[in-house]
Length: 327
Image (cartoon, rainbow, N blue to C red; front, side):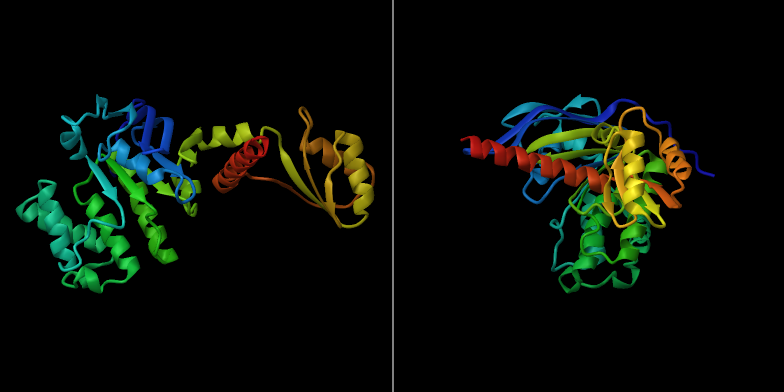
């Protein structure tokens, strides 16, 4: 049985006041970030929000206009960048050579990572088996489907067992089975090797069980950042319920309003409400039973990363619209 490595509480990568301008356009603005070792961090945002620019800044591939980055506890500078990046894997939809075969691509990148001989051969075989590309070893990359190229780009990023792994829309182009397999492997890397993972995406499938921390970028700014459970509790601090009654939905709504002081939203025999501070779901149900209402089901609302994402993006858009109107 493989024992999981102890998790450090120190951030593997952090940023302070990170800003990048391209002429008059601000792509990333005053961004603060800290990603703890061994965790999976979801860097979420719509297309054009600044996710890719942020990753390039965090890896030293793009110099910041202002602000600083620390990687593995060391300031990221032009002098330290190459050495620190040797411990980092980055998956994007680029960096593949279409005129080379699948194995030749991995061999080229493996040598750049310092792998040689039998160790490199074994690692290439392991990665191709993992990603179910072993039967395409000699195929030219230019002949591969989009999904296969996506798998190969992930394989290139994990070939050297990086301590920090960036995945940019890793499940794009993958069928559901392949996407689940990939995310399962990422979990295994975290469990057995303590790999820290940053996933940049606007496709939220699979993040519920993988990412324990998220940051949501909108317009180049970090709107919210932190542990998922804490952010959801902050955004929706009061319990939400859906109550289904067999009949007499109008009377049931009146009973709930009398018990809680809150008028529920009603659709037929279905009531939805947010409980006020101090109110308990059990007390609401008891009041309905005392009133002779036949309760069919009581379902607490479980908020998700997807709910948090859309609520944050919608709130940001509403603020922008209000600012524009004020002008």
